[in-house]
Every structure is written in structure tokens, then in C-alpha cells.
Image (tube, rainbow, N blue to C red; front, side, top):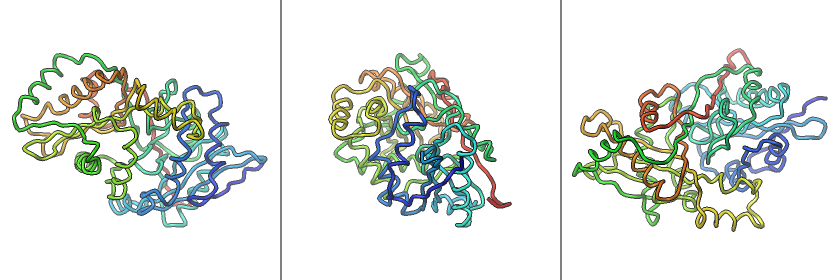
Length: 379
């Protein structure tokens, strides 16, 4: 039976795009459906990403049934930084059918090629600062907050459509508990320095402190593969989104001589609280979510940022800053009753960071793959 591809503009009728995951992930006990209202907002012009980007949505249909989805998008911030004529696909979920996956990706390629794009990379939903990669290892546990999940066949279908691996991303599992004597010694050494001061993010000054966090992020990650800095409107949206879920006990700013030099931010695992809501907040989901986050709490969290400004990385007296921050976050999580954490994501070839996580007891338990395809010969 023939496959039909339908295109939906941003902010259009999204119900088939949202609901197709119910069929695709039926029987998968680890899939967590994102909240529909949050996806609707991200896939509309309200999303500040679209102040510097453009995109469209595709669904695949067979016999009147929706059998897959994906997006195609262009990020002008990426193009300005890399000048590589690269566009992206994202939100790719399909049934186990190579023809369906290939049809969706061809539709995305044609849309991108019509706008001058010569290379397609993904899945990125919508860019490198959001959900990145296709899960290729670690299907036996649910995804953490702001991390993707896929069926085991999805990566193979992307490859069958002519894509090849360009980069793997690691997610690390970490058990909260007593850290090593070496880490404790490193913590004490940094804590004793008079010029070093650490404080929690202030919820009453969240806009200010999120900007400080992301200023360090933009400096610390600037040399990473694929990095694109967050824009001012994106920072404002991030601060607004964090108001519901941020725990000040898991967000720290470390100053050296009065300048923010290092940051650490973990978020409670929202997916733990929404797993049974199936994307819906109304009529009963919202009170459940608020109670679970604010009263019961979560037993897991995701460390999404731990970074040090480049100017301090090779200063001998601050060499233990990473271990200091890991220890600080471990102890804060333990006080909150958090038992496990995910440290994610890291690039497969980021040796210093990966070695540091191993030293703290982390182990790679999920691997996400970003694929790429050249269209210079034509899509």
C-alpha cells in the first residue's frame, strides 16, 4: 500500500503528529510521552528558536493510518557559525518499516534542498541544544528529562535511508552516595580557597542567574562539536520554563574573585512524574504533576550542565574544580532523597570530561547517534 506524506506548517493541526507515538511505542514500557502542550509550543512560532530558524512538519500515512513523523528545520545561528550548508531533521518516530522512514527523510531532504541546504544532520529536535541523537544503546530504561527515546530498529532505518554516523553522545548513569576519598580531598582543597565562593541559584533572581549559568555554558562549550550559543530570547524562555521544576539545591554558581567561573545544574527527572499522563495535563494531570514535583519529589535527576570557563581549566590551583562540583551535586542530591542521576550528554571523543565522570563513578548506559547525509548529488 502506497505511503502518503503530509506536510503541516508550524502551529497547524498537530494531533496526528502528536498521537502517532501511541501506536509506535505501544508495548514499550520505557517510553515516556512528552507533554502535548509543551510540544505544541515548541512546534509553533512562539518558540524563540524560530526567530533564527525555520521549519516544517511531516507525517507519513498508509491506508488512512498515521505511521510516522519527522520535522525538517534550518538554524541560521548554526549556519552563521559554521557556514556548512547543513540543515536538520528531528522528531523522527516511525513504525518498523524502511519505506516509511525513507519517505519521511526524503520529504525533509527535499524541503531543505529547496532552501539551499546541501547536508542533512539529525535527529536534532530542534537543534543541538535540545533533544539530540537517536538512541542506539540502552533501551531497557526510560529516558530522562529532555532526552529522546527510540525503538531499537530506528537507527537501522535511518542508515537504510542513506545516512551514516557522524557522532555518538553518551549518557552516564550515576548512583548517588558516598564519593571517593580522592574526590573528597579535591572538594576540600577548592573549598578552602578564599577567593572561591559558591552559592545556589536564587529563584527570586532566576532571570539573572540563568544568564550567568548560560554565560559560562556559552564559554565552556564553545569549542565543542556542533555547539551553537543560546540567544537572548531562548535564555528568557529557559528561565520561564525552569520556574516549575527548578530545585535551588541542585543549581550552583561558583565565583572566583567575584566572577562566575563554574556552574552546575541538575533538574529533577520530570519524566518520572509524567510517565502515566500520556501527554495530557488536563483535566487531572496538572495537579498530579505539581504534587509529584513539589510534595513527593523525584528519586532521579539529570545533571545537564557542569562547566568551567576556559580561562580556569589549566590553572593548577583550580584543577580540582570539576571534582568539587561533582561532589557538591552528589551531596545535594543525597539530601533531597535522590538516589540516581544521569549525567548527559557528553561527546564520545571528549576525553577529559569522560575521564572525570568515570573517576566519579559514572558508567555509560545509553548511547545516542547523530547521523548525516550529503545531498550535493541531489536529494
